Structure formats: C-alpha cells, structure tokens
Image (cartoon, rainbow, N blue to C red):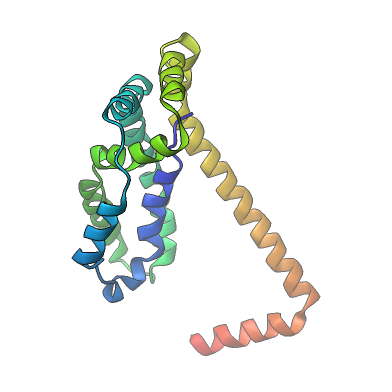
Length: 189
C-alpha cells in the first residue's frame, strides 16, 4: 500500500503554525549536515527497485492529486485559523500557491525512499511492484488517492462532531466552566 497519508501532514503542519511563523528559525546548517551524514546509505539496487515501484504505482501522479485535493479541502481550515478579515481572500490563495510551488513531488519521493527501505525488504518491494502491475493493483493505484481524501474528509467530520458533542457534555456537567468560558469570551470582545 502506498504511504500517502504523511503528505497530509505537509499541508496541515504549515496551516497549524501559520500564526507563529515570525518566531520560527531554520534548522542550523551544521545540524542539517549532521542529520544527512547520519542517514544510512541505501543499497543502489534496492533504491532502484523502490523507485521502480513508485513508477508502477503511479505514486508521483497520486501525490500530485492528493496534494491538490487536500489543499482545496484545507482552505476553510486555514480561514478559520486566521483572524477574520477581507485580507484572507488574497492571503489564502497566495499561501497555497507559494506552498505548492515549494512542494516538489520529486523531493517527496526522495524523502520516502529511505522509509520504504526501512520497512520493506528488496523482495517485498519486488512483490509490491509485481502486484501493482496486476489489474487489481492498477485499480488500487488509480483509486487510492480518492479513497484517502474521502477517508480524511469523513474522519475530520466525524471528529468535529464528536468533539462538539463532548464539549457540550463537559459544559453541561460543569456549568462553572461554561460560565468561565463565557466570561473569558466577553473580556476578549
């Protein structure tokens, strides 16, 4: 199965930290250099097999599709995270345009090659490549991006509804907390 769900994080992480970008510092060059030196070397034959698997799976195309769909789905989330205002109509599209221009699928593939190397043997990779050349494997590769996006949307909706219900129950059980929350909101306005 393709590992595409980590790419959801690539969209969620910058959105979650959008209000705190001024305090963020890039990783020092020395730390980046040390991290790249500590990464184990991948057997070139196995790396070639992993990249062949990505080709057979259509991973690059799937990544592009998932990223585009998730970007569209995340626009309302970003809008809710930012202070209200008309500026959002310009800021949010510009953010996604800039973010997507920096997000290169080849870089993502380079990032996940070591993950596949860690979790799959060369035989596993060869078996997966063989599977993805079957009719069922081809179907799975073609529909998986939609399945992932639809699953994420459904679970987000479920989580929001369960969260809403849980908050209402807690506030009903603890009216002092509801009052404190209302007081805090009144002070903020």
